[in-house]
Image (tube, rainbow, N blue to C red):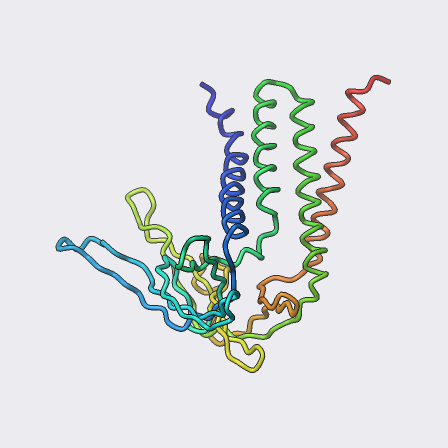
Length: 274
């Protein structure tokens, strides 16, 4: 078996699985009874070990306060979460139908690619690898052209949609750095691996807020306490984002879209007889 041929499927499979996972989450959010913005009022780490010092429970007890869209009352609930949140941080909560318990969800506005587009792109990459392994160069190039053009259009749409939101710069200050261990050292990989997230304090509508950003780095020195960091506020949806409409995204999107179209035209010149 030629394992090099199997490797061609890996990018497509990864994109498809990540995209399908986000599609399931998207469906769960849109089918919920209600969703609302909430404030984290308490976050405590709960750890319980057995007699052999093995973890039985290891989670964060997050107490959130939100306005119930149904009765407009302020409510509080404790939620078990694998993620640590900063006190005063704004999060999104949802409650599914026939349930009394809310769930804290991550803010997904930062993703460049729509989950459906990501899943479709992964499927096209899998088909590309399949045709490449079969030796069908024309079909493989057609799928590649579709992937390039689709990725370019997604980037252009991401830029345009953010630009239309009229985001306002929101100056903040890094007050702490959240450290998450992502792996432990083994005989093959030396040393523990960590990811670092800045926790930013900012003022909004006369009140102090804190946000553990999704932006992260594997370098411990990437974020320093006391440094300023700019966030972006959407006055219409009343949400805070970490990214704005960057011209580089638009330029990259146009370049990919043009490459996709040119690739498609080159295929037509081969397929259509002169």
